[in-house]
Length: 412
Image (cartoon, rainbow, N blue to C red):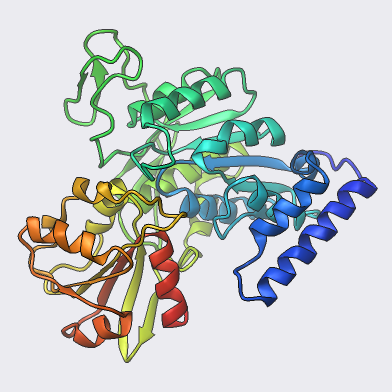
């Protein structure tokens, strides 16, 4: 356990108080949780506040293109077996949001922090984490995010020499490249369904060979490391070869992979796999994701998918045809304004489903589905889509701001 460094300085206390006040005003005005504006105000008054708030915590950072919010939640639940946890559970994952979260954790022992990919190295410098979990890297928000190989290189440079234990996905070549600059890496075989961003070697640019689950570069020898933790069916295999059953209320293979990484992280903090995995069963939904809600007398399961890799994983867990599917896509600032990624998604996997389209960019999506040869209906509102859907539980898949729009409408 990290030692508590005592009370905050008067300046830091003022910054925290001002930040909380700004957040309260934002909430009262109906502008959201206020965590981002609160953190911005606090950091303006004390630029070193994030580091000060983390000094008494054992911190784990979680970063990835997909799955970081869910994995953060699973790790937080596991570590509560050993003490109080503070976490940015709602996904405000840039420095301002992280600062707001930690401001409420004066009595916590652990900080479990989701970090946006672009800010990982900077946040790691500020909070001196004990562990960093790296899950995956794939194309996302093409108008604002660096090309994936460039991002992996920035991680590699930023994490070189870190004292943190890196818990990294051995199945993603970009993650392996990023983590390999660190001296203390725990490799996890968590799988990689989406491979289209990992066909060229991040070390030399050569073509990757991918026989089965293995991968290697035939030109420079860069290859998949031997994992010490692995997902095997419905079990987590630990470094001693013991198999621990995964019992989750969250659906799909991707969440079993998240649980496997979370168990490896928990073990770094002394929580045994059996205890960690049992605690993860408590998680039913994550910031509304995977929730089943009732709206207009219909059951609707809310699913978030923000990029091609996320959509691929989501298609694998929805109910089969003829379950109705609503797709909602926006392209606002938080989503990325470039929707060309829609053409990287294999929407033919939805063949046989009645499909209904929503969102600011529903016509972009309609063109994509037309080319895929799918039947669909364009709708103006979620009410219209739900009322038009045939019987059965509705699977609603949306990207970030479209997901928030839907949650507000259906009362979740």
